[in-house]
Amino acid sequence: MRQYCDIPKDKGLDNTINILKEGYLFIPNRMNLFNSNIFETHIMAQKAICITGKDAAKVFYNEDLFKRKGVAPKRIQKTLFGENAIQGKDGIAHIKRKSLFMNILTEEYEEKVDRLVKEELIKSIDKWEQMEEVILFREISQIICYVVCNCVGIYISREASKKRTEDFLRMIYSFSSVGSKYRKGKEARKETEKWIENIVVNLRNNKIEVEKDSPIYKIAFYKDVDNKLLDSKMAAIEIINIIRPIIAVSTYVVFAALALHTHPECREKLIKKEDNYYEMFAQEVRRFYPFTPFIAAKTKKDFRWGKYEFEKGRLVLLDVYGTNHDSEVWHEPYKFKPERFKERNEDLFDFIPQGGGNPAITHRCPGEGVTVKIMESVLDFLINDIDFKVRNQDLSYNLKQIPTLPKSGFIISNVKRKYSN
Image (cartoon, rainbow, N blue to C red):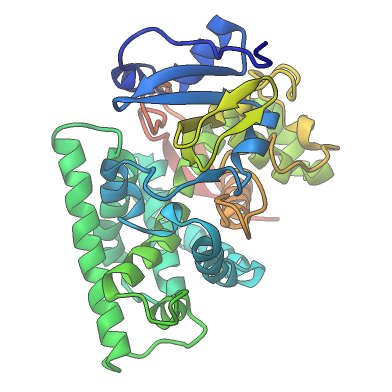
């Protein structure tokens, strides 16, 4: 007698179009329909299994069961990740490459980026006071791009960072698009890779100098598992994989501003800095608002998970948005409540806005520390350093759009510097 259960099956020959139509809710919608934490569907002309929840994340990040090589679609590699980059590595190759990123994204580096972002925010006040309206997403993105490029060892001016910011944002916001928006994302990726590759070549040929402990130097002269330098294009791609995710923090910053605006009851606690409330607030923003919808891998071998069987070579999607809203883990998951993080026991698999597991050995993003620091600093700036008004605007965000953002980019006006007594 068979000892396993059939996985609930989604209707339709291929549901790739439905992902584009439903976005972040594609997997949660079907989990609710089947009253299950698993279902089978067809995506990109292949069978796929979708899973959600803490236990699902645990099995998904078992490196003995899943691989990432060859999983990310080319359209994502050609815009967001870069082709054949760290996101598609497995085993020793991944761990060694990940050690490079962990060596760069240290607490010291996080604090440096955070300190410089704070300084740039203060410097921006004079300019913002003269502006009729400040689109927070645009301004914060440019500040972060300027700071991170210079911290990496790519020295650019504030003016030059404006153009570079647009290119990085096109990479981030085009991978799920079609038509001209997607083409612009590919073009931005190619141009940015060429720009940074040229810097790498000049650095290796001693035509420019940077500090030896800078990220660009570490990557330019890093030796991979074959004990050889990365080719100059791959070095450029991995440098971008340091810069781009930190610029993407501007998305969380805008959602933090939205949360501050729509939950004014939190402001007083932030002003008083009660009970590490800044961190609790930032973490709840990362849990509550949409960032990564789901992530993909393929099974390395046949195995059983609970009462279900997985075949070797099966595409599997882990529901990130749904796991962060799982009612079995989070009480009232669709309510914004920073206090839920006050006495929360740390878990590597139930809170996965930037991936799950140990960041040193799994595909979890190693930049969560700098993400939270920047969010806290911008919140502190908005509360304690400036006064401003939030005019009527479209602050809605569309869960059918991946990635998503408040439509207006969060506009503030009548910015005035606060002076301490």
